[in-house]
Amino acid sequence: MKKYLIIPDSFKGTLSSIEVCEILEHEIKSFNADAIIKKLPVADGGEGSVDAFLEGLSGEKVFITVKNPYFEEMTSFYGLIDGGQTAVIEMAACAGLPIVEHRKNPSLTTTYGVGELILHAASQGVKKIILGLGGSATNDGGVGCAAALGVKFFNKDKKSFIPTGGTLNFIDTIDISNLHPSIKHIDFITMCDINNPLFGLEGAAHIFGPQKGADPKMVDYLDQNLKHFAQKVKECLGFDDPYFKGAGAAGGMGYGTKVFLDSKIQMGIETVLDAVSFDQLAQDVDYIITGEGRLDAQSLRGKVVIGVARRAKKTKAKVIAVVGSMQGNQQDYQKEGIDHIVVTNYLNLSFDELKPRAKEDMIFVFKEFLKTL
Image (cartoon, rainbow, N blue to C red; front, side, top):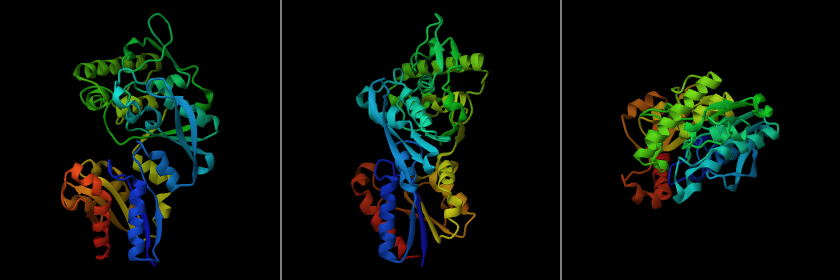
């Protein structure tokens, strides 16, 4: 009786991690009806992270009204796991690009709603909050979130205001004395899979601003504003490291969580594996099946497939990576602990051609692979 642990990321734009789990489980059961299967869908911190945690762990989805990226009211959510001791928040749930649709403008958008989600979770008595960064429509350095939690920002006229990416340059002083007391007793973990600094040519504005609607002129403006913000943080709060890995994530939200929440910045997959007690779950399984849309050099930095494979080295399980496509040398991935790589885009189709048949191709290729085990 074989035991399987299925723990894939989503295949961006085609299949969610939950859908991938269901496909692989169905084919394994067709191949081996007696198989014992545990499914743990994974998300990288962006859209779908809360659902992935709740699918893999028992928990509750909490819905509340918060501000969207334009300070308009919307219904958003977060997840409670670990018996209500831990909250999982994805900033995309109230500050994500899909919410702004045709109104993309990172100089005007805010992370205020993220702070409201945090505050509500804190009121439920959680001990830990996992923050997923990804898919944001913002470039405010996390100041909107901080404002919702009680941090005050003042301009040169000593008037308080809530800055956005386009008004960070108006910050003259920062006062954290009114930070909500419940926040100070919570351990924060920020899921972040990028290394970008806060500002500069590799920073939040230059690298991610254009996809959020910024033209070259706005990109330069936003970048200078983030630099100004970092200088004010140094002057007022004594924090002087805008270059740490992940500071530029989600429009500088990575930086904001470090400055205002003293959050631990951690690779998303490491956060997930710790939360689901992966080391214990994987001890007695025969096969660990992971996956993501594309296996490439970025994956080797520690994204889902490689993160799982590295942790699986402590077990006797064979690691199977089901991926949409693969670039690079297969031996490099095998060195990280992957035993088999299954490429589902076997016809090497373009994304537009692949999208409507992604599920069908995954079923076909995985079914053929199972015959070789």
